[in-house]
Image: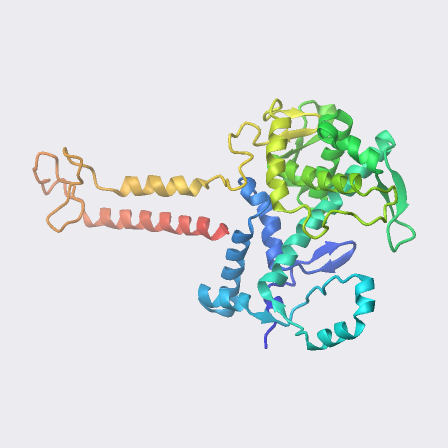
Length: 378
């Protein structure tokens, strides 16, 4: 039986470098990164799961040469794909060892394709959050001395910054980690690191207004909200941990924290905090949509220029309207060039056969150009 996971693997010609190791991302991850890089609105920065499902269905239908309905059925089936084992408390596991062993032997080593691929979506945004939090914490520790260094779990050479509950609470108070100029620099640093790790920094960097000021990060409000939301979620966990020990168990749910619903709330916060800045550059950041009224709408996506071209083409090819507002048609029911007073054109005014050929060639060229535009979308 064919593995559905292999049909979502990236092409071998497009390796992804992660910590020095060449890996191949699933196509759904490439889809998310492409949307984030070429975002036309907040809806592309954090793609709704329904749009992800539509992409999965189209891709599966293309690879398996089936219709969309059959592709949805394949994705709803259980395949032999990697699955996460349930998290069981150690004490409960020891007390019910025999029962757990019998359940494990009866468990099928399969999982629903949708569920497996949705995990790739969640892990993609989690990796972005990890990079953002690490960059912010390192910047604040270096500039302000907040937090303490500790070894990353399972390593001896890597260190990370751990905030105490008091420090995390102070950073959250009145959104200080965004409103205070020094801490806001940490958010900008996190944006820079995230774009650099994703390999798209050149698309979000531009020269500053003053030559000596260096480059600034130019991105959308939704990009800033994505990074600040991840930092906020981390600070909330540290503030409620109740211990200065970084290895202490967090009281907040780890698997469900920091998802799209929190990002939607963060959009309104970022819009309010940066409302006075508008679309101008300030302190190393420029919001490219700072003057857009729907910049915090999570479902908004700016229409392509091709949409207006289609409307103009349709209106230009429509027959001219008559005095009563209806289109003039000929005897065969097709649009006619007859005058409004009912007079027929003379033979001298009639288009020659060569004119028909030129018009047909122009329409064919326009249709070919429009087809190329539609292929690039989604």
